[in-house]
Length: 134
Image 1 (spheres, helix red, strand yellow):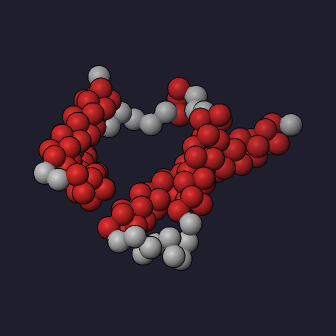
Image 2: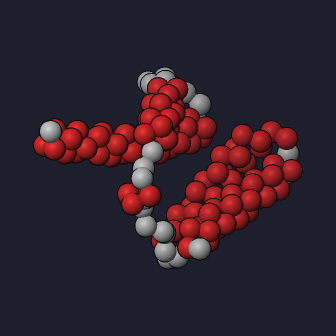
């Protein structure tokens, strides 16, 4: 009986890790491909539907949330490092660029919107990084 419970625990741990990795890959792929699609319309959508990546990310995220983790299995707190700030700044700049490209038809205010959005995204990511340390 103990052996069967141990095997079941191993299978659920492997399945949980599989869904975590699937979520990461599909989520990042969606945003990278969306960025390319935003830069030049039809570059990605001509070959593949981006909604597939979004659906996979949402479903795997829901499965991860439903299965959950016990408190002993939770990841360690994220330390403050230059790497995390660099990643946050990079994503903020990419988001600001996407916002600028989507709103450039409205004129010079699009630069202001993009800059404010980038600062807001960077501030929120800094907030999340700092709260992980507490």
